[in-house]
Image (cartoon, rainbow, N blue to C red):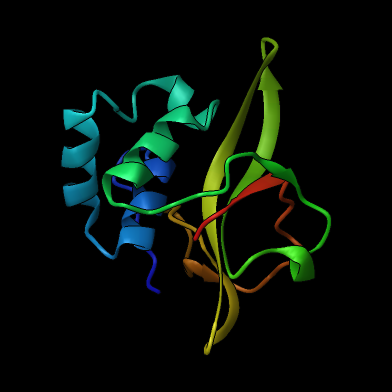
Length: 135
């Protein structure tokens, strides 16, 4: 899998969906807009409902519930990870990334534009709070 770089500050859910679907950020953004989902809506990164709807649009199935992160070995071969989890005025927020385990190994696709390397293997620095398994 290849990373998709987010084109908007809060576009990590759109970029993560694009990476999983194997499409461009622009295509995923257009589909999201047609579903009434935009990166400007803070619930895109404080609730899993919108990203699940966007993934369903691309026929990508996810686990029904979020699962607390315990260790990297316990993750399924594909997962959306909630990292950089924090509270703002009592509301939780996070950054979406994609965990992948395949023939190339284990890595995280991080859509953050400012990163020098968007394929990450620095697992000790990534602190997932929970994940959604992707099938």
